[in-house]
Length: 398
Image 1 (cartoon, rainbow, N blue to C red):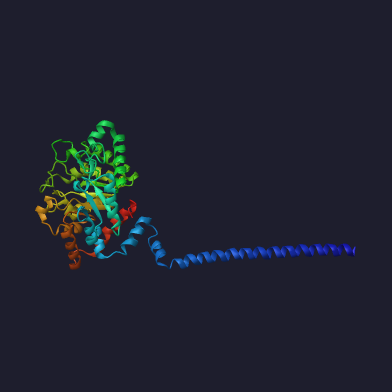
Image 2 (cartoon, rainbow, N blue to C red):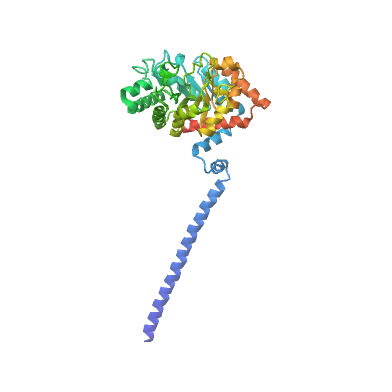
């Protein structure tokens, strides 16, 4: 009996020892895991003290490209910021020198950049421009189709020029417009062009209007459908777009050749001309290009491109937060009205982000001087440059 009790006691002692050992080792394992988590948290906390993570945590509710744009902006000099705001005519003979001297944000290509080139040579040229720019460039072109084709006009780039929106629609409706837009984007991007200054949002149904051949040729509602189709397709193919020419040409004269005054009521713009622009904005357009028309119902004294009132409409009424750009400040409507040297200063004060200028060598020093004198605040420059940099990140340029 005593022997049986001894055996049972030994067994119970063994079981108790096993349970104690199990609890001990399990507790130790749990503590090790807990300590590991604490170390991991500690690494995260310590890491947040460095500049990189501070920048990431500083704007927790903003998208990553905006964060990147803010980080890049914080490293830029004033001269670099001003340069980013200029989208200039590419002077073939001095392009590399212009990049070095003015640090511009982008080049716009015209006929002299295209003629006598092949796909291979132009691609190499544009690649060289990008390699020589500290911040990668917007490379833009007017490839609207129809009477405005810079690239496809030359058979080295396409067997026939791109057709106009009206011709495309009459031939194959919106599906053909979408496929044509896709082909344009693919061709332009294959060469190194990352922004097409299109589509034309102007509403015109009168063949006698100056702008008519470049438009969709239908009323505001159908033009809005066209714009939505084009902008959606451009976004799918990651190429920049420009809704033009805000607030809408209507039946006005060509501002390339002189001043144009628009007498229409504001209600007529709200009920018609604004609709295609709003459709483009809702579809996610990259930018809006503002015309030089003087629209009396919005600003009786200044061309739209230089009018704070017009830009307030774009921001507040149409709710557009992207890049706003001028039409070329060298056009006669501006030169006759305001002269040369101060037009970019007025354009920035009005609210433009990108300045299209052929006389950038005059305009850039004027802007720098306006900042030094306090006529333009550097914060105003920062607002525009941030939009431009974000656009470049969105398009995968930088």
